[in-house]
Amino acid sequence: MKISKILSYVVLGVGILGAILWYVMSSSISDLMVQNGVSEARELALGEAEPAVTPLYALTLVIFVVTLIATLITVFSTLAKNPSGLKNTAIGIVAFLVIVGIGFAMANGVETPMKDGEVLSASGSKWVGAGLYTFYFLAAVAVGLMFLSGIKKLIGK
Image 1 (cartoon, helix red, strand yellow):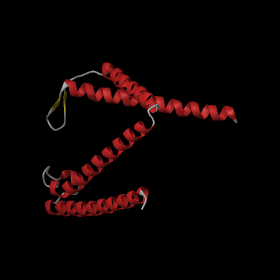
Image 2 (tube, one colour):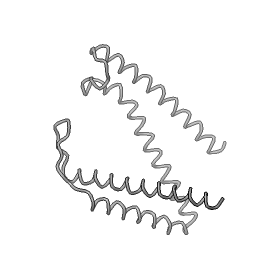
Image 3 (cartoon, one colour):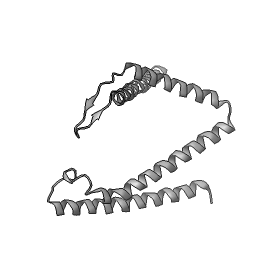
Image 4 (spheres, one colour):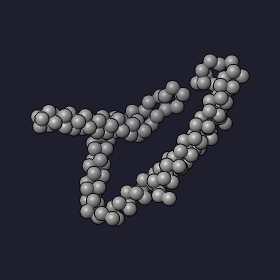
């Protein structure tokens, strides 16, 4: 049996398991809402819905870890087969780190009170800002490249 067929069955199984857990979680939260006389799930106390959500959260965590491991194995095996691609990979990683560094330099770090009464540290605020600046820059580059590609196609026709 080919690996792609095995992976298809695994994905199907995980999807079915996720749907079952979602149904169980949804019905459990609905029951909790009726028991507590609330109309929205966000009105439930913090710990009341935790037992209903924990299995789905655990499945999500397992899927994330498996996906991360499979991705890393694929990337490293591809790089081992094609060492010339290592240079391009290194250039991409360095470029990304430079963009994150620029975003970090542009970000301001200010202690920020949050809704739950806690305070976001200046360092945490600076990293959030760096992430936003990095996202905006990369999104602008992606939109610009799509625009440029569209113009090239129009001119080429």
